Length: 427
Image 1: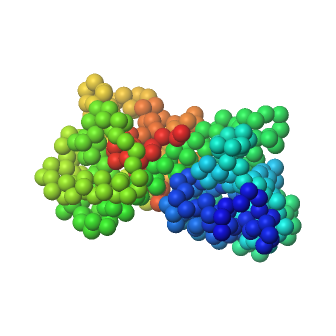
Image 2: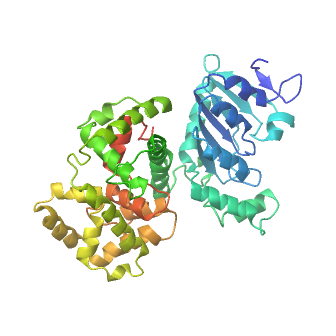
């Protein structure tokens, strides 16, 4: 079996699925766009060859939650989506080849429907680069498939009220998932709203890059099987946060973190494993950190008790609220840049932010409407919630202690992850 120039799903013209079988061998990168998506098979072929995959689909009556869930769990796959029927492109770019035509990523589209799809090659066809550019335009305007969105989509599919028919399902889906249309069908402009644009950039930064990187470090950490005696009574996220902070202070000083090379997953695992072993050998895991180790577990427990479990956040006075916020390293570190240290920061933060406003931000971050990342975005950019001197690093670290399944990430975390070889910035 060899790679053909055209596929039509017949014995004489070849079956579209063969394109994925053949091109998966040695593949490094794949950009796949298909409005209908109901089979994981081509994704598995690529992923088993360690190919990195960007998958762009439409959430609709045909795209199945099962295929999305399998792909979502695949560490080699990043998924984004549209909900609008205006997204109709079918193109499958794998390294220096692209299949473009009528076939969707469904069993019928890949095996039985009479489709017509042609293969173009980078070194032979002028249209190749244009198709790559088209994919990137569609990708940049799409929304990130997060776990909450996937769960809402699954709920729409399971609902007894789910209607039959493509248009009816599209309207029904809007009760569960916000509309996302490709740029060619945005009335009057290709520019998305400022908030949506920034929010999706935020999702790409945290949900597509930083959180998977944090969890990859956690996998290596847990495989090692050890915990520091000083931190073993708390959740592993506390020790991981402390480990990454120590890594930044001890090994990634100055701008060296940014100069480190990007690494493959296998190279990162070896790199992380070496530093984990050193972490367990060292006698000094504070090494310049302003928060003592014996306070760490207490600090996080107080954050969760006062800001999540407390029935009346409003009853906390300013000093208790301030001391609780100092459990975040990013906020605690502001003392370095404030005249008068701790008491100087206490006075300055209070002068800039009335207590009611501080409580309003915390309550929205912990319990507000929207998913966790959207609430964090509000607390950084929205005038109704944002605080002076409590910027992105503070909010995202606090979010990690307040919102389930969202690890604490601050500036030191990001620099340590980049030092370990992760991509931490959007392309």
